[in-house]
Image 1 (cartoon, rainbow, N blue to C red):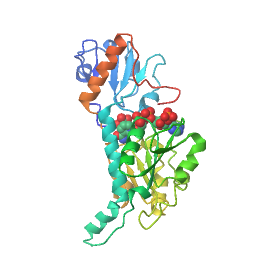
Image 2: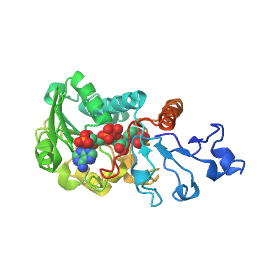
Image 3: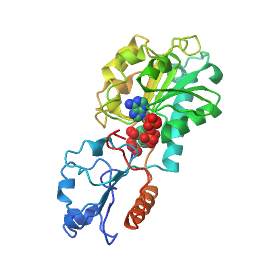
Image 4: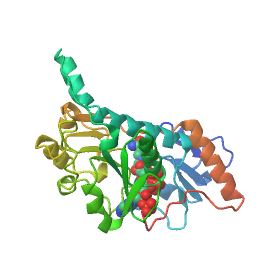
Amino acid sequence: MAVGKQLAVRIFPDAETDLTSLENGTARFDDVQYLLAWRYPFGLLDALPNLKLIISAGAGVDHVLLDPDLPDHIPLVRFVDRHLTTRMTSYVASQVLFHTRRLTEVLEHQRNAQWLYVCDPLPETVRVGVMGLGELGQASASTLVSLGFQMRGWSRSPKTIDGITCFSGDDGLVPFLAETDILVVLLPLTPQTKHMLNRDLFSQLSCTGRSAYLPGPVLINAARGGLQNVPDILTSLNDGTLYAASLDVFENEPLSAEHPLWSHPRVVVSPHIASVTSPHRIARYALKQISTFEAGGTLEHTVDRMRGY
Ligand code: NDP
Ligand code: OXD
């Protein structure tokens, strides 16, 4: 997500003060009632005694929920937006198509000036499993249905969704993985999901994904780096447990320049850009939430702190 610290907007009662005026001392921390922020520095909330509402500039709120100063009584809303969803569906579709068309191999052949055929599977023979059937997971799965892929999905609570075979909860995980050739991850990072993308999980992915047309299972993580165990991903790629991966997120961002993932021939690394928050959309969204709050209405997309998302 690209709304960095320099673009984060703090909205004040007069709606004119921004981070710059806070930093140069022309505004006071006590004035702040509403905070619109993305990965703000811990300690900030302690300096805002009159805060009434926190609006996350991202869909994921794992960072906010880890803040030791987060007061219990202040509502937290997350960003849900049509453009954010469209960007994510296009990222997911692009990566699924990239790997099913085996473009890592095609590009490698191009670099070597080799005129070599690479067979690709028909979408209807490939099963794509989406972990997380929320705003972004459901929309991405629906787009893949329209591209002809066989869709599977996994969520915490049971669901019935047209065109998607749904699994849920701990009991549903093993059968879901057994029917998944390409794993798309759109889960929130919570204590339950942390580091769940590990070797044990990869080894349960479908074996029918291994054919001359799709040599093995593929991992696409567009959610959070904290969900994945990177050494396990590398081992699994190197011994064929995974054929390829697209990773948009990392536990430590930016990914260090010497990290082996950058140069792995079957890995697509992107700098947390699967779906970028647009400044004008988040500003409009924040103002709408604040107006609702001021009018005593019900906020949208309030985070359930017990669930962690
Ligand atoms: P939602 O809250 O709408 O959906 C979360 C989904 O995950 C739900 O289906 C939920 O199940 C499921 N889930 C949560 N915990 C578990 C669990 N323990 N077991 C099984 N399923 C679980 O989130 P969004 O779709 O809006 O966003 C998903 C994530 O994508 C965000 O949290 C963020 O981290 C990431 N993101 C990344 C971006 C990027 O640029 N890379 C951009 C935007 C978001 P249930 O339906 O039962 O509640
Ligand atoms: C988000 C993100 O959570 O961009 O919105 O990662």
